[in-house]
Length: 145
Image (tube, rainbow, N blue to C red):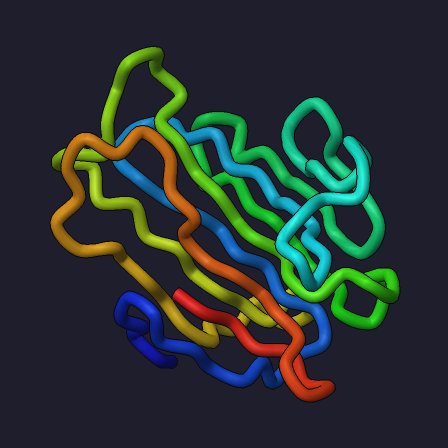
């Protein structure tokens, strides 16, 4: 397992990965499918609790007792999508990340083994984070903190 630092990346050894985001408070976790120019193609590329599945990406609610998670099946991601961004924000209105320190855990979705973890350091007034990116570079899928 790798403990990632901001901006670090790892090659993905699994074709299907799950990113779960845990914190001491409930979070809203989402996935965004982005093209090479960093844009979504349509509302279908927003994956979250009200739209839990899209092309190659699914959302799983932790129900308040476990972390919410985004699963990416890299083999099912449509052509033209080069990055899946996993975002998180505190569920409570007006709450910031100060003192919350969320941790993203990247797992092999098939055997649940941990590939890497990432806890952003020294958060303050942020109310939303891009916590992990799963992206395609030179034909290989990677994850970036």
